[in-house]
Image 1 (cartoon, one colour):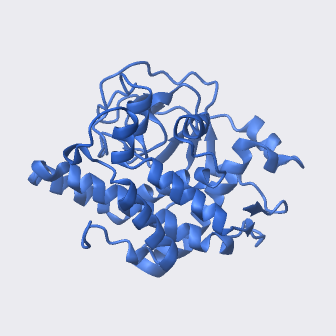
Image 2 (spheres, one colour):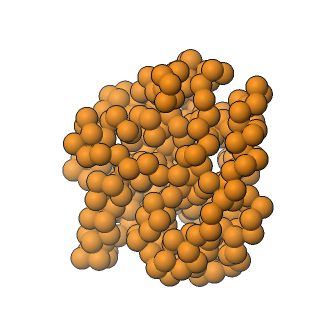
Image 3 (cartoon, one colour):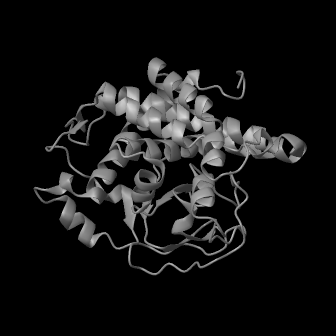
Length: 304
């Protein structure tokens, strides 16, 4: 993977709340998968298995609100010549690419206008429209305030604890979360929640379908990422290699529910799956990438 050093890093798509305090502490456990009063996360179960204990989230509807970030330092850093050597600037550029893709793809494929969502960088604790969260939650999308949240130190856990060391694991994580934003915009997430309420025995199965679709959407972005540009038409990625895509696939496999349960020393229990098996996550990311078509990501109508 090679980023274009001439592409502008648009920090307006990020709220930098690192060092702002944010509140939080240990709260009640999240209903995994979320809802308007909960959280849709990529690998909450990973953190539970590897770190253990509480999630650090108050899952009450609109509990906690959200404060504004101060982007002054980030703007200065990401306008410097060495911007792409900085983790936060690279991640901001990944967000720029993902949103540039959906700005075009959503109206073309689904006939809906794309509404941008900011990514919040936080450290340790953060207040969200879904409640107060801490870093133990992992990256997540909050449908109540339409924001993506991530403590960038999460990538160290991903590499050190799961062995997902490749750089392309990072944009895959972000693209998955923005997949949840797309589901929110299309009404898929709300419809799935209603189905869960009508059919609680299949709540986990429905959660798996939502997560696999977000993986597939991430794959569709990855296929089209080299075609994304900044507002002046500069390409964001110069190249994305087969090795990069394999890094995303490896990450998807490592965060499968079965792999997580095995790593934590627990027996594999399909009744507890909420995000999909390693094979399913690999399958749906690969389908999104191979087709480059978000319409191919019908996990709800297809077989699992």
